[in-house]
Image 1 (cartoon, rainbow, N blue to C red):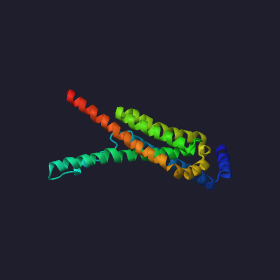
Image 2: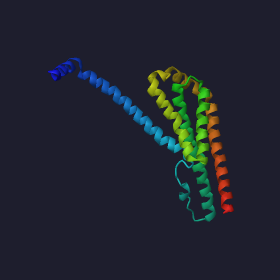
Image 3: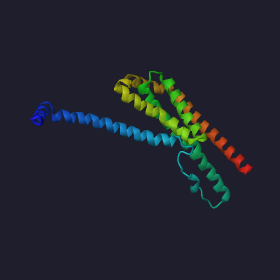
Image 4: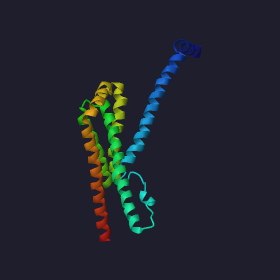
Length: 204
């Protein structure tokens, strides 16, 4: 009797259409969180590595002439470590900037400065200890996810994002300066690493 009462209550109050609508919203929310989490997981480990990826472009520098081979190896090393790596760091800077634009009430210039400071800290830390760089790299993106889970869409300032898009062309010089900065910083860090390894090699 009780079971039949429960069945009748559920059948009279529940709707298949409402259940499907609720499931759609939940599914979209879950997919968004999973995609974001996977992206953060993959990319923060990527950017936190001292050698972001093993292109080994020098392997393609084989030549009949030894001096030319050494020269090509040097050029490819420069391309790999001092141009491609900083560009990926700059890409992470842009991603962080976009995320902060949606959440922060700061000016676009302040957001760019904060995002670049985070990226530069990650890259410097990767030369000291990659585990430290990983912790720093994942903190901000995961904090943004936590804020979204607590406050929901109310935290996302779409009007501010539109304003930022309008402002960005006006501050292209700042963005270019930051690109030059991250490239210069990577060059400096590579020189320090080379010097450190050279001193260790001589000591041994």
